Length: 103
Length: 103
Image (cartoon, rainbow over all chains, first blue to last red; front, side, top):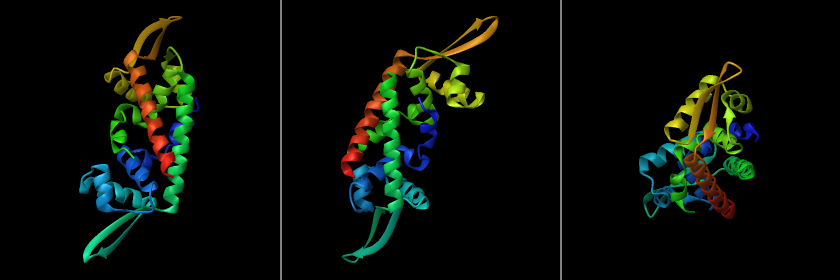
């Protein structure tokens, strides 16, 4: 059991809803805000709050444009976000390996 | 991507320090409070707070006795705690599988 592993888990990504957002964004080049909200069954307010946290950490980029004269907000993982998510998943895998070994 | 997986993650166990406590306790029948504190490099106060949360959820049992005339506090996973931790780890594994598939 290496206790450091747990403390190394990225706080920003470890929160359940943000794990879900990062996982979803990792599966594609970009998502519209609406698609993301519907995929994750989150409220606008909740998703906005978490996206802001992820933006502040430099993990998610948000761009606003127009599509058919309607405002369109799209979200994507940044390169840093993809790296951080990869490292987070690697670390979780180590932790699971330890937990499985200890059962 | 199944968004339900994330919401099913047990809040009590998902907190980093409690993940560390549960993982450590899963590796043995019981630990003294002191061993646990030293293994995890946590403060007395911090460990006490988390152990209380785990006790309230029925995941950890705490017993007080004497050893060489000194008070000895021991902590162990309850049967429910072992089951909940097993389910938590299974779910994390599913999530990692999805994340790996989506990269």
